[in-house]
Length: 635
Picture 1: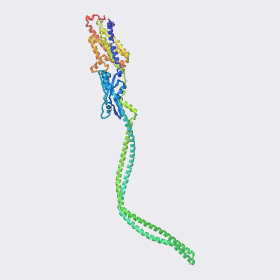
Picture 2: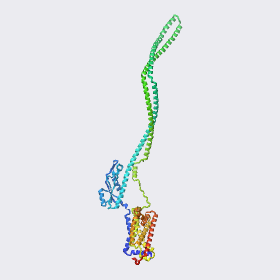
Picture 3: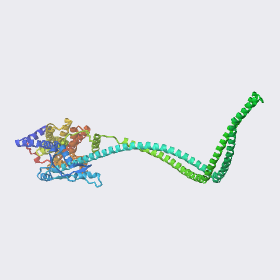
């Protein structure tokens, strides 16, 4: 008997009756039913989270910030409703509690009365954490409770973002005010710098002036000291001067009296000249008439007389002028005497005043020297102040430049960015697309194992008659393996049609994906065949155990790195792990070389299982009984 004949005989046995055919068809549909229904149910559950009813209880009474009433509870609740991730309902606390008990709501979020106040307390000396209460009821759905916890974390993040945005907005506004104040301070520092520079210039001039004043006051002090020493005898000398001046005045007065007498006599002589000339002229005319003298002689005498009269008159004028001068001298001498007397009387006071002036000049010199030193210190201090003010202005200008000038809209954008500074940009080397597509490789591999396992409930692992009829153990093994393998490939064709056609999951490489599915199915057929050949019904049971073990270790849901150590070791040895990874690589458009490695590993399991099965067949050939020679149901 040849292998195709054995396969045909097994198929005839499986379809010998209507019920056998129905049973075969039902078992053939097991992987399709399991894989298709499970993947359909989990195609994209996250896309329907908005159908999960959830309650929001807002008990927040609000708070006041900067004189403005705010209510973060209302804001957060409205944001959640607008976001629409879940089917949110803003209800009172009593309605939420009742809804959780009668399954109207899967979970509830409560924002307490002090929600806003506690959020705002972060900027006070007594900060308190705001509380968000999540209420769940596992009788509704444990997974819904888990989703509620994730929602609470999302709400927490949204609250933090809102608070951070407002805090950043207040900070940026304060920073803008600081910039404005710094700008004002920089302007004031500029004015201060101008003033200090002017004051420094004035202080330098003051220092120069006070230095000159000190020098001049020192010279004045020395001169007044010299004058004081020289005028120490001034009272006695001025008294002697007054006495002498009085004597001179008295002498000048006597001289003036004699001069007045001489002036009177000179005036009388001058006044007598015309009369005497007239008398002499008359006498001469008489003599001329008497013939005593001639007229010419008389004229000559008159001419000489006129000359003499002129000299008398001129001399009188000089005398009168001298008398006036002597009178003035006498008057002046009297004034000098009076002044000298006054000087003599004032000399003691003058001498004391000069001494006091000398003392004051000494004090002035000392004070001027101190003032010069102080003015120099003021000049130097104002110079230092000017330098410091210049640095202050430079620093304030630099500070103003470092703080950006922003508008209200820019500050709002900055606050939004500060509150949520990171934008997640996803870049995927290979993408599943949806939650269902993400689970598809795992459930497709699992469906392949379940399909083969179900087939072996009715398919004979190895025909005893074939063992007797065929001489080659390998041919017997091949015949026992090909029937479930072919049926498993047909199962994979139906499952692939459901996945790609009915569920519309994206398959990047259809041929390679189906190839991995088919290879996994025929490999699983070889493994379960080996278990049945060696262990019979116990091997069939171990096939179920091995399936459960691979459910845990295949890494179909959570990453295999999260498994405990022994299970992680099994992950690298069991075939379903490589079937799942191979389908992922080909379905999502991943690394083709990794998919090739997965296929080689499955082939290694396939060959190893067939070799082990062949060894089991050899063992069976050495233990044949008369019962083994009885014809089977397929004749």
